[in-house]
Length: 238
Image 1 (cartoon, rainbow, N blue to C red):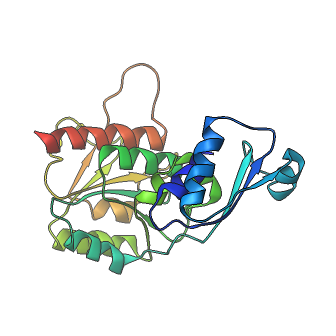
Image 2: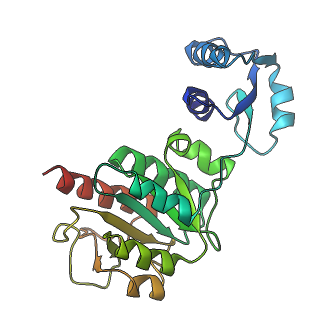
Image 3: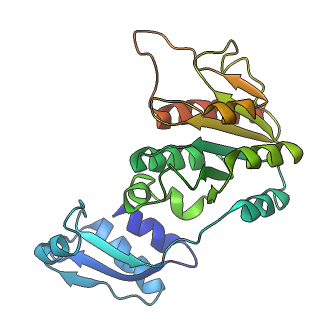
């Protein structure tokens, strides 16, 4: 339901049609109906069985929306975005994160921390699936998600545009709190359990790790993204 509301809250909405359970009559339903009407969309009220048939493998929560696909953004769009900023670039780069739940959670954290875009390779990485869109809680509707063909090349081009590339790895000496995360910045996190790839690491200006206590060896990539991005956000506000 949150994903539907977020899609309707965008000025140029992607939503084409909405189906809502006739068993629900609450404030969230009222908000969706009101937002849909602003776009001249009249939601269909149907029974839950019909919704179950429309989305048999999803927890629809009593609502389904048919939408236009999100536009595909690439390297050209990335550098147009950077050129148009009136503040230092702040980017999250995900190196082959394959779990759509993690991608959606990373999108949510990135938007909350003030990042301008999330970047990922086209191959061996999750796209913005329906699961990722749902987990992002609306962030994917507002924050650009850019898929690139050659991540190493994009990292080099970002450096040429003055962006400081900071990777994350457990086997380095600089902690997150010692790293300089001010100015034009891209934070790079790697795939679940594998970390950033060798070629990606070689194209980073600096590598840092999150100091941890207790017995945990690592954090989920979406949690690590939140920790790193909010420390960067704190430094950028100083």
